[in-house]
Figure 1 (tube, helix red, strand yellow):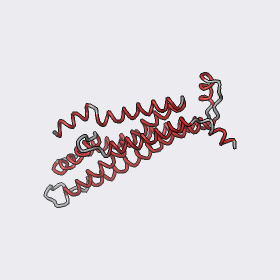
Figure 2 (spheres, helix red, strand yellow):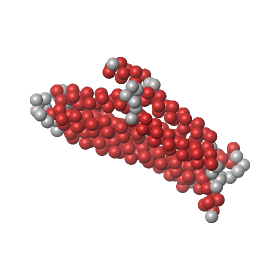
Figure 3 (cartoon, helix red, strand yellow):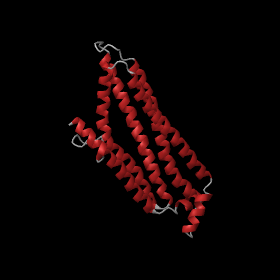
Figure 4 (tube, one colour):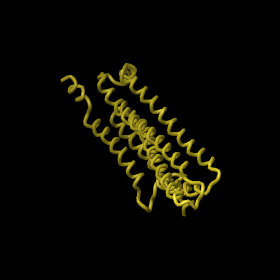
Length: 232
């Protein structure tokens, strides 16, 4: 009964705000990965450039430049995975000891907030961070698959297996990049979810800001304009 009483302290607007940020997370991801043909996202434009990369890769000799690029991509996924792990550890530490948050809340509100409510709100942050961590780890592994497949591409462009294997490597590279981007979005939304500690209205505002940032970087950014000029 105590659990029910504590959960009742969350207003309907809190549940609406929490559902909104989770829905926004899914929807913006789907829009970015499945845009209309007339308005491609940066993710889609870069996917084509990755395919072009693998076509050029077949005839490049030596291939040290390609290995350096791929190594840099893997280092990026490893870095963000480590960052997520540290952030998850910080959130779990707060879940286990919410006293600092209660102290801050006491200064701005006379109504005490149960520990369970703080833990629930921090749990939403942990959800996004955990998802981001898993995406980064998976992206790192797929980049590893891509590296092996690239190594299996014959040096002879006339070999019948050269371009098909390069095409496979391109698709693996694209899948790794998509998972990397999903991880980044998870981190953005984790930062937005922190606003729930302030209140439901703050969470709704933060959700709108995060959605705008993510959308604008995919559909209204200078890098996108550059890529469109190169493909125009």
